[in-house]
Structure formats: C-alpha cells, structure tokens
Picture 1 (spheres, rainbow, N blue to C red):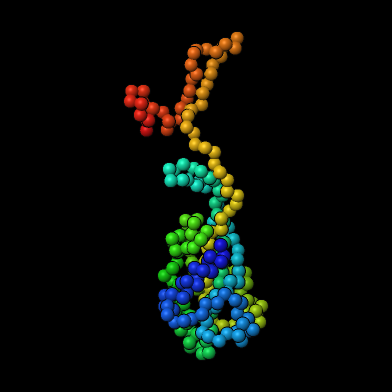
Picture 2: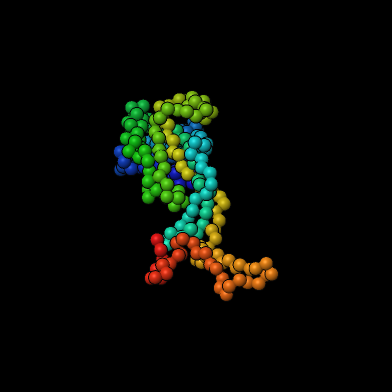
Length: 218
C-alpha cells in the first residue's frame, strides 16, 4: 500500500505545474551524503512518519458482492494510516528552490481528495477515495527541526504532506451460499406419528410467490 501511495505522489509531482521541467522526484532521506551526491534539481518526498488514524477505525465486517448483487465474501473494514512526507526542493539557489516549492504546492492543492479511479493496484481496488493534505498544521509528535537534526542536515523550507490511505484488513473469508428455499417443518404427534401428508415449508420473503400467478411477491 505504501509503495502505491509513492507511485501516486511521483505521478502528481512530475505533472501539473512541474510537467516538462525534467525535475527529479526522490524518496530517499535528504541526508548530507544524499545532498552531496545530488547533481540535478530535485523534489525530495521523504516519508518520515506512519501512524494509524484511529478516528477512522470501524468495527464489524463489510460484504463483497458479485455482479448479481449476491454476497460472496465478507471482510473486515480497512484500517486507515496517515503517511507523512517531508517535501523539499533542492537546487543551487534558494530562490530556485522556492519556485520549485511553489510549483509543487500548486500541483498538490487541487488533489485534496483522490478518487479510487486515480489510484493504482490494491489501493484503487478498495474503491475508496484517499484524502491528501498539504502544508497543514503540523500535529506529529516530532518537530521538523528534530527530523532534520536526526538526519544530520540543516533546516530547509518544506511542505508537510499527509496522505491518509486505507490498508486492507485480513482475513477475508467466503460467505455461505445464498438461501434458495425455505426451511421445512414437520409436525409429529405425541405418539411420534407424522401429522399430515405434506411437509410445511416456510419461504423467505424474497422467495414467496403469488398463489394466483406464480410470480414472486415484492
């Protein structure tokens, strides 16, 4: 799931206001060693924090239906995780870095909610829209200054980018076959003899038929 979010971000940042610019998009930690090896203008998108958004946690299970709307499987609701990225621009001049950050901001802002059709692989197969927040209030337990200090680098202007993505929960199991006939009831007397010659059958509402027409009743 995380690598699919990376694919989405790389596609977004390579397009929009940065389309045709030839800017590299990197997901490596922007350490001093990395900065020394860099030889081209780059947008760095570093994943620095992963944690569950417990406010979105759901209980129970969801039903998976086939083309006939029959329940074929059941699964637990997905768990949602906040993926926090540190977005920075790297060039030789600070003003050029600011222009790149501005272009990245203009590219990401229109995508506050990404539809399932825009998402790849298993992420898109869940059929859920994914929210994206850029340059919002920093709420993580670690400050950006602490993150830069841990990487051994100097503080740079950055965008805090948060993608709240669903992660499929396991297990998923097959549902039982749909009901096609009602339950049968046989009534016996005290002496154990079967009363009547026919079995009494109670049909589910959706299987009941009109006695006059033979059509299923609604």
